[in-house]
Image (cartoon, rainbow, N blue to C red; front, top):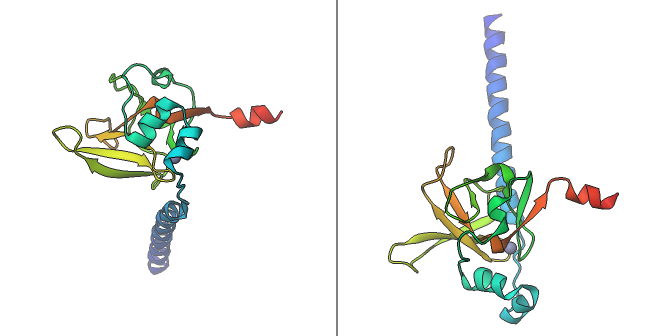
Length: 171
Ligand SMILES: [Zn+2]
């Protein structure tokens, strides 16, 4: 009797472990599946506004407190303005007081790629859209838990999709 119970418990533990592995595996698979978008500088200029081009393609930074997305508090998702890729969920947004839309985590692993830049005296961790390579912002280590990270994003590089918008449009 005892042995059966123990055996079952072990089996369940193994099952949970296997499921977690599968979820992790799926996340990685999603990241790998991202097809890169490569456009010429001229093509990007046609696709984007001059301000979007300056930020996404030239790693520019918008002036703080200028993006309407700072005050965006509705439920929905934030996407790369260059290629529509989902980058953040509204649940991950918080008010950092910096004047730039701030998030403590990304929506899906692998949708954001990072590199270290030395544009200022100290090195900063730059991040960009994994699909089109468009610059989004910088990551700082002064964010809230559970990650302790602050994804400081240019509002110009994002667009916001209110949850359920597409469904409403179809009616
Ligand atoms: Zn993109």
